Image (cartoon, rainbow, N blue to C red):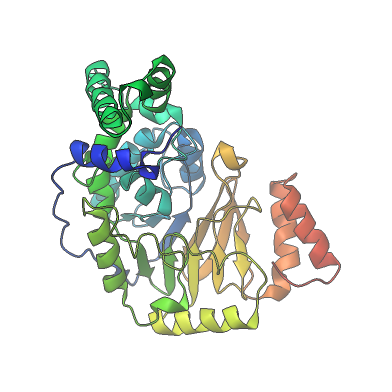
Length: 377
């Protein structure tokens, strides 16, 4: 699938689709204290069935898919779209849960991930064909024809009539299928999905835990939660996708992987401690980086890498983080496994996970490393 962001044509067509940007809303609350139970679910990537199942296993919803979590705070760590076909169904379910949880005294926190931002800023490299199909309207053919007419006009103006041959037109139909225009409208800053996303936070604090999709680097030690969130929301609410210094920052909250992957170095350990002190928390819970089929504690559980690979695209490993009355667990396929407070307990922890979720090669390799006395992940 050709990503329109990658060429000059895209800019023209992007502006044709979305002439008016919706003003971004007032700052959302970003800090909650005195919460007895928190569940964090990482990247679900368009897999509705596994999303529903992991919520059931965490006792957030009942057999009908309705909120049953009481006063629990449910943090969805971002990356609802892409890879799978059912992002629209998941978003509609999350929107319903927000209202249901509020009535029960609970709270749903859908955070902004890099894939939400990509869909809003015209980076469509990972959009599943089913996403376009799901949003196709009764006017889809007419919308497609109007859109392709503008593509052709633009190409002719730049390259001449000879550039628009039968092969070119055939490729256009593949690059911009029925439902493509509706998808771009839904994900615009004033569209149903885009406006919803742009009203959310990128990073929040609940009790003594910080929640963020990608991670957060020492570059942000001068920032507050509100300033980070205001900057991300402001950029996503702009019609100009070239102004994305926060959203596209590889060391920023949507993209940074330094806390969840690579060797655990003293330098990063110092960075983690500085971040915990700055934001006044005991741990940072992140998504964005799958690989082990479960929640991976790092730096003596000061970082919890929660992206287990819930979506079928990543193996369908159903896990979430539970923080209840000060205790921290992984819920792996419905079973609670205590997360150790230091790296010394990692071998026992991963062995317990392996009993529940066998056959994850990276996890089995990690267990062998720990058995041989190698350093923690």
